[in-house]
Length: 495
Ligand SMILES: Cc1ncc(COP(=O)(O)O)c(C=O)c1O
Picture 1 (spheres, helix red, strand yellow):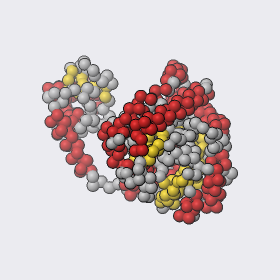
Picture 2 (cartoon, rainbow, N blue to C red; picture 1 turned 30 degrees about the horizontal axis):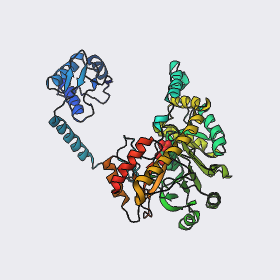
Picture 3 (cartoon, protein in one colour; picture 1 turned 45 degrees about the vertical axis):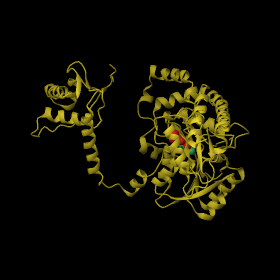
Picture 4 (cartoon, rainbow, N blue to C red; picture 1 turned 180 degrees about the vertical axis):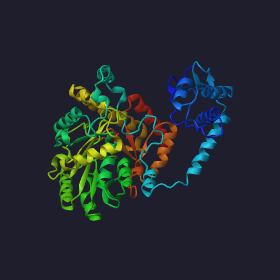
């Protein structure tokens, strides 16, 4: 019998001693509701009657009576005294009843008002994919989890847990673990020509949190922000959530069209761009455009959010240095993430902020969620300083290039003219163009039904979608998965 072995501590139970309803009956009712609503899942082990009695401040007998009743009615199984579990096989009609009462409670709460800002945040789409838990081809942004050096990571992790340092177990610095800030600053200087000292590096829970932090801290409601169109949904969400008025600026072969932006809104407060490798089109912003953006920002007194989310993966030619390194006036806030270099659930990213903004960002970071987990930060520091990181990036560069070639070749063979896929010198995904006028969302839905993910390009446009296409992430999938994905895509496209 496979049972969950972790006892579920019940922190949300509250019993009312002044109520005429006996305490055991109140407890019975609360537990029953928790089971029916799915809050307590089938097979979950409950705390012992002794622990629960202490926690609730009631006699053990009270808890035992409630448990006995639930056992008798089939909500729980096992034996009081030797492990009690939520029944694995609850009759469907019981769960239905629970679901209905949960739905009714939601319906009652629906009238509760969100703030106008809350409504914007709640209504903003952040994820292109509905099924977040699966990592099947071709979801973009997923690195090769099958090629991660887990052995090395495990050894470094074990080293920290064997003799845990007190300073890593208590509250940490909101700007991040000092040695990690140093390692990142050194890496960014050497690899991306970013100009910073470790004091300017703020560790965040991924680039998304850095974006959110910047939006909250730098914008007043109604401030104008240039944003790439098409562009990254997460940036749109954070900017809208901070009350920004978005000014969509088109992207061509040279990146964000600065002249168009300046015509549409000459005095924007902020610009969001991904110049190394535009998401989703994959364009690298030309040097001329970078310089003209900096020049415009200087005239307009604007700040620039540079999202350098996957710049490590360049397969041909020399990478263009980060925009931040060209900035002489402290106008660029640089963002990066370990989600693409290592794995997304690590939730570690960083931002490099101009010196005069460091204290403000440190404070705001603390308000958001205090600081990122210290042991993970320390493990990552060792991973970088002991050479694993550079080795991993080198290996992934070769692997991703191979995977891109595999995708191109399979697409040429299976898809013909139905999807026009161009190679790209950088990144972890390709954009496939569909014939003019094709409804890319319908194609994507059909693909999803057949078991393959292909985000529709139109989803990322703010104004009218100018290109119909599909975004295919390839980095996270081996050659077998890529070929299978392409065959499924061919079926979805009716080839
Ligand atoms: C363009 C771009 N920027 C930033 C991020 C944020 O990544 P994370 O919050 O995982 O660091 C992503 C993730 O998909 C992305 O595609």
